[in-house]
Length: 338
Image (cartoon, rainbow, N blue to C red; front, side):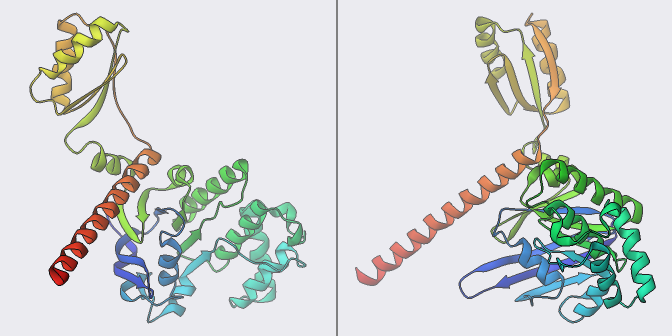
């Protein structure tokens, strides 16, 4: 059941010579980990700033925790924790001193702020570094401290902008596991913006693919895969014994079957887009003809393949639009000057 805590309706941001975000509509449910995936410059950070009320949209509306980001940004700040890609701390202060200071700014007494700071440092795995000056922290430790910083006001939503940037692989794994743990324990809604496909795939319930200011697609990985690759059925991989003569015959034999939409031969592997019933019929056919069938499985796609396919589609659209614009301009000049 949908229970959106973030609602975007036709959200756009135009600059003088650029459209940074183009008519973005999106809903993120309470307790969900949603990944906003796209290359640098795609408009992810601009979207986040509009969500937080730190940048005014050209058009459209952003509702977060029931508050309109343009009209009530203060209400949003009380409900949302934000970790930017480069969070600053007072380097000459310890971790607990930094967090206690933030706690007092959020209305806690000195004692409450100190207790909350120590509790959060334990949660994010920095208990043993509580009294260490932040200037000595690694990038990964600073990101953990940043996570504690956004949690200190008990937010309903946390927004993380490129949170794994500059962290070593081991640190990334631990950091992502920590986010997922907090999400499960506290039913915390997480919006994670990143250009790292693997990181998004590891922890996100759903993904939005963001390219050139546009949300090209959204959904979980199986649904995105179906939209792109399995529109008319499932992709099935059939493996036969490696016999060149049989494989050549097989290619023409399969093509003679009615109803199959596409057949791709790769060595001794056959890739077929078909319904479940068609796949069963094909397997029976191959076995009945005496082909050495040694394996049948449904092909699955990772986020990297899905993302590249959408990115390729967007580039093709841009090329097509450029050609269309050139044709229009040429037609205009011909009419005007001939």
